[in-house]
Length: 525
Image 1 (cartoon, rainbow, N blue to C red):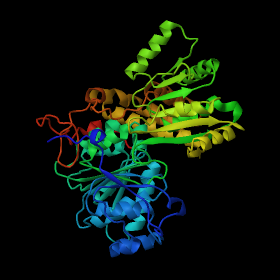
Image 2 (cartoon, rainbow, N blue to C red; image 1 turned 90 degrees about the vertical axis):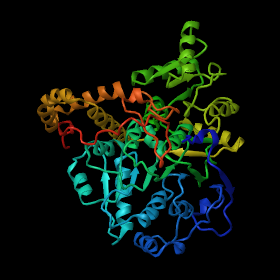
Image 3 (cartoon, one colour; image 1 turned 45 degrees about the vertical axis):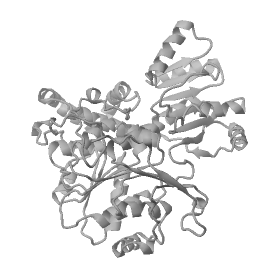
Image 4 (cartoon, rainbow, N blue to C red; image 1 turned 180 degrees about the vertical axis):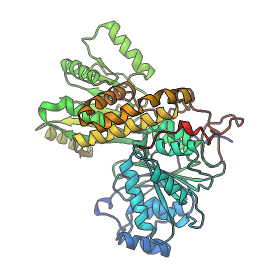
C-alpha cells in the first residue's frame, strides 16, 4: 500500500469567510477559515443529537464555539482530520462530544485514546469528559507518569472506554499488558506540537505498534503546524484533511510573531526561561553586536545548551567548523549577528529568537523570514525591555504584522515543565532496562526512599536530577524527520496498518511482547 505523504501533496482545503451573523466569539468574526474539500456544513448546539445537547447543558454551554461547530460534523462522519486552533478555543469539547456519541457504553474496553503532552492537560480533558458524559455509562481513565499505578489499573479493570494520558505512561501500560487497544476506534493527538517539544516522539512511535491492524479514525489538534508536526500527521493519520480556525495562522504557512517583555537587567536569564518553555527544535538567536553574540553563547553553553556563535570576529577555522554543523543540521542554537548569518539556511528551523529588537526595522523581516519557509509555520520571538516594546510595535505596524505578547514564564512554570520532561525521560529509560540492570538498580531503592523522606537531603536529589537533565534533555527534542529513527530510539520496526499511515516495514516483524516479565515493572510511585 502506498504511503500518504502529506508534506508532499498536502491536505486538500478550501478557504471560507464566515457568514454574517455566525456564532462565535467576537474576535473570530473576521478570521479566515480553511476547510477540507467536500466541506461539511457547520453545526449548532441545536443541531447536535439530543444526548450531546444535554451534555452541553450540563457544561453550561449556550452555544458551540467555532472549532466545535466546524470540527464535530467531520468527527461524527468518521473523517480523519488535522485541526489548527489556538489553546483555549474550545477544542477539548470539539473532540469529546463526538467521542461520547460514538462510544459503545456496553463494551468495557478502550475505544478512544487521547494523547496529551502534560499531566495537567490530561486531568483537564478527563474532568471535562466526566462533566459531559452525564449518565451515559461511559468511563474515563486518566494516565500520566510520576504517580502510583494503582488508580490507573483500577480504572482499566473497571472497563474505561476513554483513556486520556501522556504517551510515556500509556506505553508503560501497553508494554505490561495492563492496557489493550484491540477495541480502539478513535485516536486523538491533543496539542501535538507540544507533545513533540516534550520529547515524546519515540514513545508515540512505540505506542503506534499497539494500534489495531484495522482502520481507525485519527485526529490531530495543534495550535501550530510546523513541518515536523505535518510529518507526524503523515505517520499516524490516514489521508487526513485539514481544518484551520486560527486567526493568526493560515493553513500551515506563515510565522507566529511573539514577544516577551522582560526586566532590562535579566535579559539573558529571561532567554533561558523562554528556551526552557518553548523548547525549540532549532533556532537562530540574533543579536545586534558581536560582543553580545559571544556573551549569549557563553550563557547558553553554561546552562548546558548545544549553542555556538557566528560573528565577523570568528577565526576562519572556527567559522568553518560552525558552518559545517549548520549545514549538517547538527547545531541546535546558532547565535549570530545579522551580517554573519547572511546567506545561512538551517533546515526545519522552528524558531527565530531576537535577543533584542533590530536597529534597522527592515532587519526584522529578514530575521523572521528565516523560519516558516517552504509551506511550514514557524515562530519568531523578540525579547524586549522597557521602551523597546514601542519600537517593536512600530515595526509591526509598518509591515502589518500581528504581534502577540506572551507572559514570561515564572519559576513554577519552569519547574513544572522541566519536571514532566525529566519524569518522561526517566520512565523511558526504565522501560529500556534489562533484568540485570533492574536487579542492580534495586540496591538503591532503600537509599532513594530515605533521601526522599529526609528534607535536609533534598539538595542531593536535586543535584542528581539536574545532572541527569543536563546530560540527557538539553539536546533538541526528537521529532519526525521523514524516516523513523528506529536504531536511535532502540525500537522494533513499525508495521503498516490499514488505519494509520506509516513507512512500509517488513510484515514478518512481530508486535512487542505484551507479557513482559513482571520483574521489569517500575515500582509504584
